[in-house]
Every structure is written in C-alpha cells, then in structure tokens.
Amino acid sequence: MKLDKLKNVITAMITPFKEDFSLDEEKYREFIRFQIDNGCHILTMGTTGESATLSHKEHKHAIDIAVDEAKKSGKDPFVLAGTGSNSTDEAISLSQYAENAGADGLLLVVPYYNKPVQHSLIDHFSKVADSVSLPIVLYNVPSRTGRNLEPETVSVLAHEKENIIGIKCASGDIDQITRVIKSTPEDFIVLSGDDSMTYHIMALGGKGAISVASNIIPKRMVEFTTTMNAGNWEKARKMQLELYDLFKVLFIETNPGPVKYAAEELGIMSEQMRLPLTPPLKDNKKKIKNVLKDLDILEGLF
Image (cartoon, rainbow, N blue to C red; front, side, top):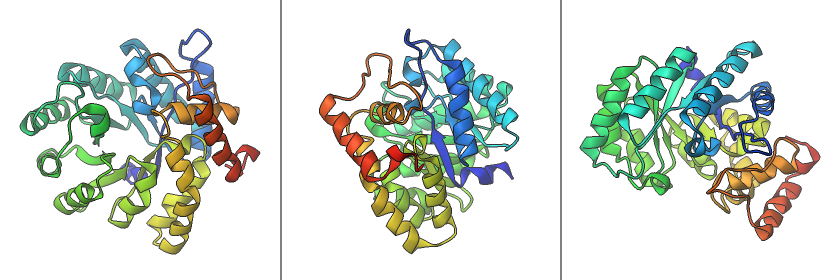
C-alpha cells in the first residue's frame, strides 16, 4: 500500500532559483532525482520550499515537475504536495490541481494569519477533504501560522474524514503530540515536522519525518528512521545525539535559510531565497559550516 511509504523520510524540499530568482527547473529536477536516488520520498511546495513567495502558476509548475520526475525514476516514491492556504477556496483549488496532476497525497497547513478557532478549522479541513479523494496529511506549525491545531480537533478530523490519514507535528510540544497519538485511530500516521524531535515522536508511535535535514543528508535520515521503525532504539539514540547539532543549527535562522546555505556549501544549489527571506548572517554561516565539518558532511559523506 502506498501510504506505507509515508512511514519513513519525506524530504521537505528546498526550491532552487536562478540569478533572476525565477524557478530553476533543471536544478529542481536534478535535486528531486538526488532525493529519490537516496531513498527519500518528496514533499514539493511545503514551507521549506518557499511556497509562500511563489505564484500559484509557479506552485503548480513545481508540482508538475515533482510528479514527472517521480514517474521517471522507476522507484515509485510518494509525492506529497503542499496545497494549504489561508483561503479555503485557494486550498481547494491547489488540492484539486495536485490530484489531477498525479500527486499521491496532500499536505494541508493550518490556515495562517486568519487565526480561525477550532470548530472553524474542522470546517476548513473538512471542506478541503470533501473536494478531493487523495489522502491528506494535516500540518500543525503554530510558530508559523499563529494558531495551534489542538489534539481534540485532530481527533475529530481523523475519525470523521476517511481521507485525513495523518499529521505533520511541528508544535514543539511533546505532551500535545502524545495526546494526538493517544486520541487518533491506530492507523493514523503521525510524522515529525521537527528533525530534533523525530526520535522522541517515533518512540511514542510516530512513523517517520517530513524532514529539513534530509535535503542535505538524505541517506543518514533514511537510516535514522529505518532504524527506529525496526525497533533498534539504542542505535537510533546514538544517531540522534550525533545529528542533534545539525538538526538545531539548521534552524539558527528562519528555515530554509540555513539549509539552503548548507546546500550551497555542498554544491547542491544556490542559497538564494526570495524576499522577505535572505541568506543567514555571516556569523551564523560560520556556525553552520562548522557543524557540517564536524559531521564530515562537507567531505560528501551523505
């Protein structure tokens, strides 16, 4: 079953831009192949992909590219498309486009800026879910959206909507994530949305991660989650401690600035981001580079 592929690493892919800040399709295709070849599934147009600064036309084009490269790979990776919005009608439009384009699932962020109350969130997600047949992963990241998706709300949606099959948890609150796992069906897929908490979330019953770090260390992240899904917690604990500094330094400034800089250091793509985001400050770049050196990442040991 294809949903089983969500129980590992899905890379929240960064988006390459040319010098004029237009989408670099050739580099994006190359990057998608790099992720798939290293065992990751892919998320196109999530927060890390700078979806907020892409036009809807560019957003749709990025989905088309991801689906096309996945098909060409011959490895049948799971293609998750970020289609959330602070407008329910826009979320429906993007979700229906992604379904027609051939995506395997949708990632729907909590509507940002509007700050809807919990019963409004139920109405929002339910309406989007009713408009498509694809499986939906909810995305709770209150530091970005200004509104927390409460465990009780997740439970209602998980029980009432057949195609709402999981959640990406990036609240930073392990107690809340515990309540989500405790109150949702056994087959509801809880994914870490914060690399530094993946170990803790999977120890509680989470199944994998939508990862930022896997942009630059895909093989290691696949090994990390595979080790936990196999029940080898001692090895996973050692990996957690080994990778912890990287997990933290990649959020030394607003994501995806640090991981894009790291990607440039590794020759993967340019660090360029669209305003209002900019590359990390010089002192923070030095800290990022030091961590990459300490982990031998700059030597190409992905």
